[in-house]
Length: 70
Image 1: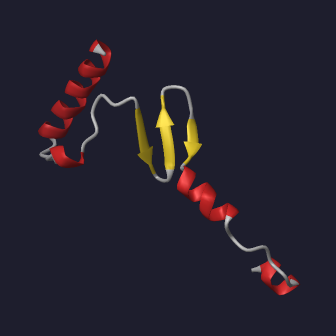
Image 2 (image 1 turned 90 degrees about the vertical axis):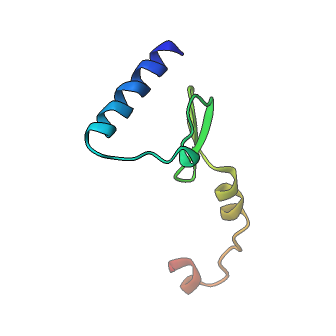
């Protein structure tokens, strides 16, 4: 955790020097897992978000060649 805090301070310092502002409401700091770009990311793996997998599984199967080529 100390290393994470050190890196976070470095990043925030660099952003401040470049006149960037960070919106605290949009930040996720020191979390074990995060959803980002339709993927769930944690220390051990990156996997597709469950909602996206369900949406793909629920797609109806094509019934014609034209539908399959779309």
